[in-house]
Image (tube, each protein chain N blue to C red):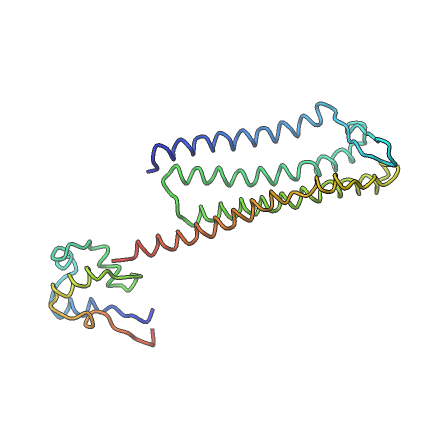
Length: 179
Length: 69
């Protein structure tokens, strides 16, 4: 069984996981409930458009675009919730925990990449369906803002942790089969 | 693995059961079964020492290298 300290940490982690999932869902819903606007800078002027002012098919497409990062993050967080269950049951080194770490790492790498691509794709879509009158101005600070390399880096770090867990699992198996 | 464990052969020669050896050397029946069935990944020198003393044999009588395996 895990120690008292580990049990407390698992509890905090579990609460945080479900809180973040809830906040992601509330944040997404509030975008629509608060009737938020899309802002772009076109020819030096600020162009704005209410999301709810668009046709229903456009709202659905934009909604899907905006929900993709949240969905990936929630998928990753569910892996952490799974890890909490395993750790609480005293299972530290197992093929399931290794798989949870790998999937969480994959979710973070994917999230970083999607974060970088989602805004240009959304801008492309808005122009393609003639919602925006012209292509928005390309701003260097905006491009730098889009780079989510830190998320990708943490994802790669979790891949390393998954590999360490895999080594730990192999060592545990070897120890158990030492007579 | 190329290492073959001949513990069952040695036990048969001594007309001894696994449980008796387990009681003599203080290694669990389950662990001795793992060793006997060739599932073990490593053997401690202390275990080998105890088995050799109990069966009055050499480590080479218990462990054998076989290239075919």
